[in-house]
Image 1 (tube, rainbow, N blue to C red):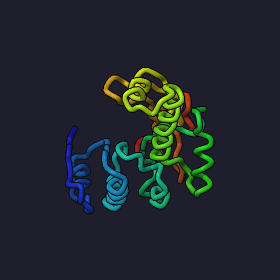
Image 2 (image 1 turned 45 degrees about the vertical axis):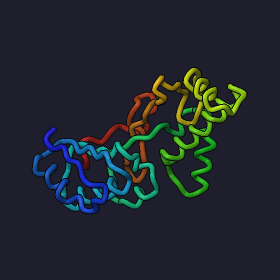
Image 3 (image 1 turned 135 degrees about the vertical axis):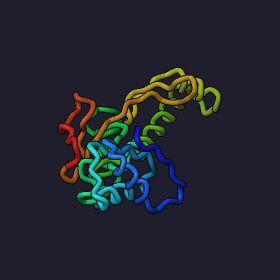
Length: 193
């Protein structure tokens, strides 16, 4: 790690941060920011001519949002993540893709997958526990596996789910799966073009 910076949440100009990474000749830029931050960092990377070998906006899953498609070359070859991908046969994922495509989205936004999965867990818990009692639902959720658009998963004792991630790379104006290998729709482009 050659540069490790944090910034205030109201930051709108990322020039100084990107200049530090560029001056340090960092091979990888890992942006763990919110969507608007990540969009602006990507624009700034392009404006400053910074070409890290790898640029990942892995914090906000921003490459799945409609705004990324308007980034032009600033978005090209940037890596992002999502919860699941339409080629996976997870419960409700195909219907969710149809829903978002009908609203003009090329990619299901990660927030759509997560939101739908939460509702699926609640529905399955209520059906399985046969109650709306909070403590009984919690006990049911912590002791059962759920089939959702985000995959089939269980919750850990601390209440956090165990689920997979999919690595995407935005190539030729669309997201391509670069990992896991068995789902790969394209080979990763490294270094950035």
